[in-house]
Image (cartoon, rainbow, N blue to C red; front, side, top):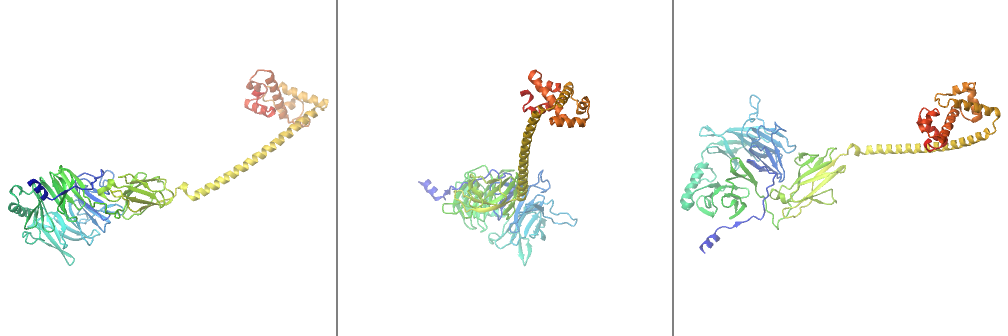
Length: 623
């Protein structure tokens, strides 16, 4: 019964209803700094990482490598800040400070000219950056505290000196009165105030705590105070401090081997027992949550007297809050990872009105480009066949549970992607303007209102232009008209040839009829001419002149007389005599076509075949 009453007296431990997802694309190198910008993107960096931008799915990296060897002098990031109303990211490295413009994602160094003309910040370790509400920014390296304008122009310079020695800056922070507190390495804290537009530095060792809660002790002094309190008010077996954190209200959370305590400056209160070594803790002022690293429970959060287990893992030994977006968890030297904190937990009563799908990047033909700040339209190259649009709701807690759907222009059917899929692939887009509309779900599957994330403008390629199709149409109809006209002309010529053949056949019949009526003298002339040709039938060179000589007459008289008797020219007469002899040989002998062509005086068998078909209507082989 006693054990039951003790258990009931302890604050309850709540199990989270939402599972935190960590996409595989999130880099796991040692992370030093991070922030969530006004757009909702998560920027972070650390040892060797360069500057990284995370949208819940994809990590875009800006660093020097073999493709961009001169982008940064060092890939080791130490601090990040957002400037100019969210249009620029300023970041410091081990060798210089840089500005990234969100309009074109170009990176340029912050230049502070020396008397010799060089850049004072080029090889300096930029340890801290802190933006000011007026758009200016504080930047530090070693013991130098520099105040820059929003245009990266130096406004003021201070040196941080403690007890007569130069001290490097460890941290920068503003309190609610806009007083700047500067923490120094192995030293105290310096306070700066803005008086009539000019900053004034005070050197003072804050040692009168807790009489003045607004003033700050060194870490050693605070630890000394807490050790005294634990020795006086905590149980003897639980008085050793393993970790502690101070709240802006001057209260302290203290972790021991067994329990979590709160100290308000007067009274020590036990909050939670049975925790087994509270190795590390961090407090988020924004969300008013205390994050704990317990050997027994893993990574937990304490809020409203309730302990919630975030990650049941005991492999880590230290945690550090990165802004209000992530915890940096350390296993040991060089073995760190980021754990993104849940920014909200939706319940059945909440709505999805705050979900706003955006396009974070696009790729054309395999080459990826980041979307510029405020970019709503995209003009595609003429030769683009495939466009990929990368989507996100910047809901890092539930990225793998979000589902997207898209359509091109209103009225078309929605195409749904699988959970965790965030890339829209578009091919063969029509020429002109196309609106890409997207909607998304929360982790509970509820859809938000459609949002037009991008207007795609695709110009016509050379073979898709209107004027080209007009030219091709004119060419087509011109060619069609020419072919039609040629076809009609050919039909007309064939008709004329048929009439001519018919007339020739009639003329031949008339000649044959008239040949029956030839005089004895004409018949003797034809027989003599045929005999002369027969005597030279195998001579392919036997010509009209040779025939006229054999008949003892001139070429002209021979032509005139043959035309008068047979209606043939001497050439036709000789060829017909050869063909008639060939026909006789084809009927009475077994010689081949080539042999017979040679025997009747034709030099080429192909020409013989052509002439034979014209005279007899069939090929020699078919005669």
